[in-house]
Amino acid sequence: MEEIDLLVIGGGTGGYTAAIRAAQLGLTAAIVEADKVGGTCLHRGCIPTKTWLHSAEVLTRTRNAATFGVQVDEASLDYPVMRARQQAVVDTLHKSIRSVIGKHKIEIIEGRGTIVAPGEVAIGERRIQAKHIVVATGSRPKGLPGLEPDGDRVVTSDELLERDQAPKSIAIIGGGAIGCEFASFFADIGSEVTLIEALPTLVPLEDGDAGKALAKAFAARGVNVMTSARVLTDRTRSYDSVVEVTVEHEGDEKQLPAEILLLAVGREAVTDGLGLENTKAEIEGGWVKVDETYRTAEPSVYAIGDAIGGLLLAHVAGAEGFIAAEAIAGKEARRLDYDRVPRVTYSNPQVAAVGLTLAEAKERGLNAKSQRFSLKYNAMALIQDETDGFAKVVFDQDGGDLLGVHLVGAHVADIVSEAALGRFLQASAWEMGTSIHPHPSLSEVLGEAAQLSAGISIYW
Ligand code: NAD
Image 1 (cartoon, rainbow, N blue to C red):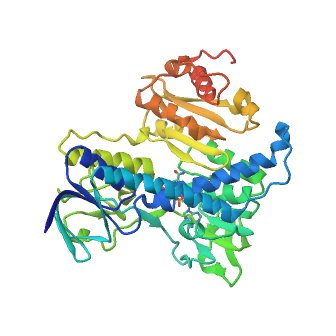
Image 2: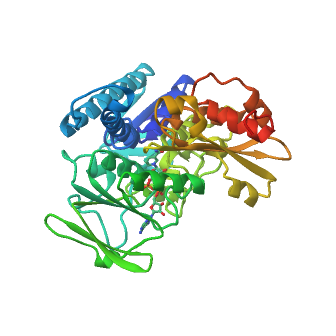
Image 3: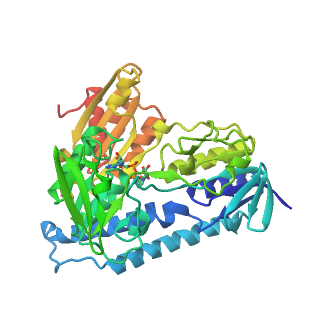
């Protein structure tokens, strides 16, 4: 039987990061991958969707060109060209990650890995003895009980990305990151969009004001946003050319016909066929249970990324893979502070955040205070004619540290890293407000909000 130090099952962002870091630390590592390295993020998630959203942004900007004194003929979206470009972007990144993996002498074993015993993995006929295993099998979209995707009228994001033309109308169940990004995209390219969310605000894990601002911006672009809405799955039917969703909203029952129904109600871990039952590793609430260094109850088996739940984000999976590899290599393992992780919904406008909301800080018993600064007063936002949005900062009044930052606006994803660094370095309001921000720039909104918190704003 072949012997190896580390076998990673699943070659997404978390999996390849773990394998590369392990190889850098002198371990022999291989990746088992049933599809393509790069995983959900590269092939069915972050990269394709952001490429589409960028096309929608270019379209919107072109349509608004006259505002900037630029005259263009009527703009329209060529869907197949957009999809071909998306594939070209994905292919470039795929080639590049394969090359990095190859450079580190990490074999990519094609197939499904099954743990037959601790330290032993079967891939078809092949058997590999691995001192350590990292489970990085990721997640897949969830259905709703009584309303499973059929891949045609009722789809998940996976199937939606495969369609070669835009639907005239789309109903979306779930106002989280996936629902909001697709709602934004389809609204901008001219589809009729209904967005149905069970909780009172969109992106409900984010600051309440952010969800409300997003709903307002969507409504202004004609999206039918229904929050606190209940989908009656037993009264939702799909026909040949239409799907009819029945929703209870504001005391009324409404029937909403649409060409396509997108289920964006969360994701679940992929663990079937993995053979975890042949180890002591446990599953809790559907996710693989791990300690702070991502070790399962089976000492030689680790798990990272979407498979362990929490924040299902590629950059989180990568950080977890890095830490797990260091722990396996015997280095003193760092702990990942999830309050330092930036989160971005790439809708128009974008919602970006790091750390705690004011309400969360208060729940933790902290003496927290927040300040908000509008993009209306930001010169760059005015120059770009994108003044909808704000920065909200939350500081601890006792220790002085930054606790959280919540941003809404076009391109705020580009400035959230400053907030993440501020949180990492435990910046105070005075430090963030006194650090010089270039003028004119979107980032000034962070400086202004921090200055307000520190009582050194020249404006108020
Ligand atoms: P999510 O958990 O973020 O949001 C699902 C939403 O659906 C929730 O707001 C929930 O209240 C709502 N919901 C659930 N059942 C419902 C029902 N019956 N009727 C109406 N609403 C219902 O899940 P998602 O948007 O599917 O995304 C999956 C994961 O992928 C998330 O963890 C997300 O963070 C991640 N993701 C991140 C990004 C990004 O970072 N830009 C993009 C896409 C996905």
